Image 1: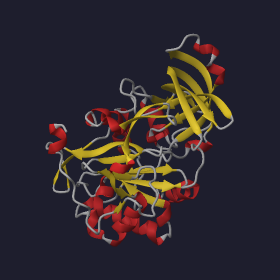
Image 2 (image 1 turned 90 degrees about the vertical axis):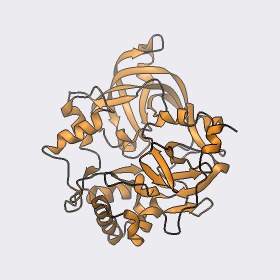
Image 3 (image 1 turned 120 degrees about the vertical axis):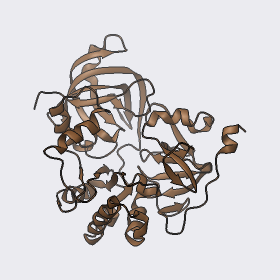
Image 4 (image 1 turned 90 degrees about the horizontal axis):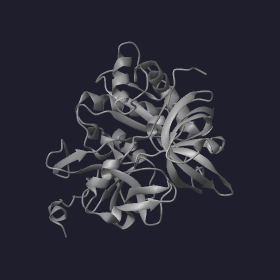
Length: 369
């Protein structure tokens, strides 16, 4: 056993009022839920299709003396870059695995090492009942007002709370990260984000603030084009704390879209493509129909011969969920994959957060549909 492993604190079980559930509870592990392992590391779940051995995800919070969060009586560091999980888990090779669904090596938590399940759905109800869990900061007050509105509307099962409020390591500067489930949840979220006494839309001078927030992750997009796609998403500012609030649409509990889909990595590709269908792009993982117009660069020979057969854009990066519409012309830099779904096969471009050497991006061009 390594010195690093011996020094990692063993976490104490969450308190009875914590939004955690012990593994084996009737709540299924869903996309964007969190899981606590035996070494005190908290993983963020990615997707709803998992092998029998692991839950796929990445390290969201981990013990670190220099961290600015506090959990289980010790300091924790927040991680926002998925690929950094490979380094954080360097002494835990059992957390590396090949995913046929994504067609690449990713990270995940061995199921036998899971000790607690933080359900986003359950946390929303717990925060409503045990209001002190939201803390005394203004952002917690804004969050409770949003939760009260959701509960009073009878939409508790359509929403969840993820991020730092899910595990209780929020600060006065925390964002509010919501999720909603299925088409009905998406419709309810659209209504919620037009309720202006709860959420103020980004407008005026705040648009520059939104651009700066996103541009560091989406280099290469113009101001107007980036804001055009960002304003299609469910996000805004809270009235009291002026905190960022967003909602990521997820798929229904029994959505079969990705259950049988597998991918095989071929290489990297940069191209221009037009969105032909956004029906399945309104929930994470997003799947868009595309028509390639120009291949700009590729790591394979004679990519133009393949261009007519590249018909889909798939993104496990939540930043692109709901961002595009049919007719949009996109600049895409992604991973070229062969997709197989039951009896259907084809080629697509995949935006995966597990790439360690390349940032996969997609953004609107200046051309409007």
